[in-house]
Length: 125
Image (cartoon, rainbow, N blue to C red):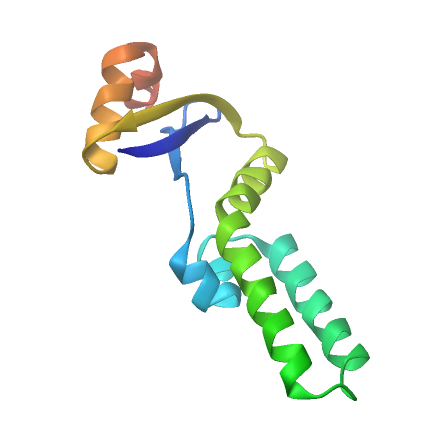
């Protein structure tokens, strides 16, 4: 079963943010942040790893590589939470949670069946 949080802002179509580990954010954090327009998170990410690199420049790789891997795993586990945080900063409200066996289309269908008032954006467009 897949789970999404539902976010709404004005008459815009609701956004779904999937729960769970983000493999692409784990592998390619900076491009993933850019793709999702998470500018502040990207700046903080680059600043953190820059400071980390400067502070650990004299340490052997055997010490720094596991720390970097652990940091990237944390990014993978929290990337979607950071996306929700970014949406909240932009005025999007979390209005619910949707769970379904299918993909995002099935989740939207289930959401609109349960909450037809969310289709107001269709009339506004």
